[in-house]
Structures are given as C-alpha cells and as structure tokens.
Image (cartoon, rainbow, N blue to C red):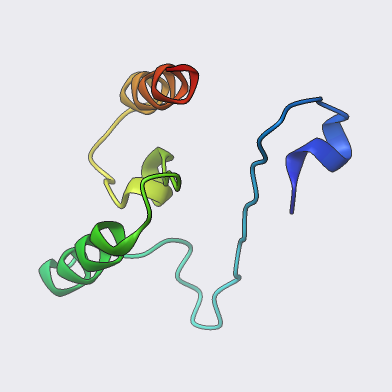
Length: 81
C-alpha cells in the first residue's frame, strides 16, 4: 500500500508497506536468535535509501512506543539531510 494514495499527502518520495497475514496464527515474528540473524542479514542487504522502522520493521520487540517514535524521528532527520 502506498500511503500517499489514501492520505493525499504530496511529497517527492513515497512510503510503501506490505503486510502479510500469518497462516499459523503468529501475529508477529518471534525474536529467536536464528530469526534475529536472518533479519540482520536482510537489513544489511537493504539499500541506503530503504528504511525499516517500528517494532516489526526493526525486528526489535523490546522497544516501547517512545523508542519507535525516536527511531522514526531519526529516519526523518536523515531523509531531510
């Protein structure tokens, strides 16, 4: 989904998200060490222009909303520079 399509926000960049429902009733990935390693591999392969933020997007489930907002603000500052 592209947020600009339903918010009518005007910007030169875009934000695209994808959410895939689970077939096994897991609502989010469990932070097993093997899965953390897999997530790190994906993050390391992402281009510099791609950001994955939030609890699910960063694969950090030990963070609170203030940490998530702080991460989003840092990404926003990086986008502005």
